[in-house]
Image (tube, rainbow, N blue to C red):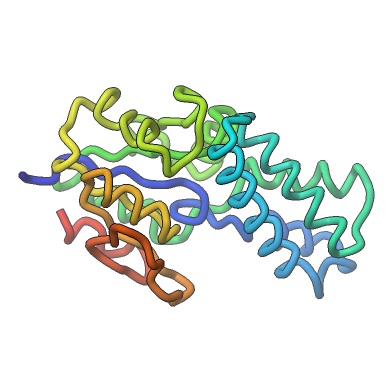
Length: 223
């Protein structure tokens, strides 16, 4: 079946999750030597907390998960202060999009393809990120797990695409920078592309992504 719809994970896929700590370090020399490990720990705990909450059923908005993960990362790196925490959280709402994103979305639209986001992010977080990046007009929908109350890779999250976009799984190319997410979506029935920017090994899971890319530039060629 022909691909009609491209659905993107948001954080780490369209939006650079390291941008918040990096931009904070630009304004605070004290962060110059630690912003990168701080960002890595923040992201790792954010994902771990989302998985654990999906397993236990203790769902909270991704905004809270993100704050909890930041608190852990700041403590690990000996950082304190409400002002710094607030600054980092504010910056997470306006993450930089990767540079190839606007042109890639334009290429999809030029081929008559539909584009959407499917994310763990809270609706207010996603709205802010999409607006800041200036890509809202290129997206048909921005779907949040808050509609089903569980984080990816729960199948009910991937169900949102068919429910909201009216397409069969075989008509969807799902794109994520998270190998586990791309694998989960492949197991669900989507065609999938893993954007492996860091050159990581393939996750050992029941399903595997159909394509592995180093960035988003060639997404339109897969449709």
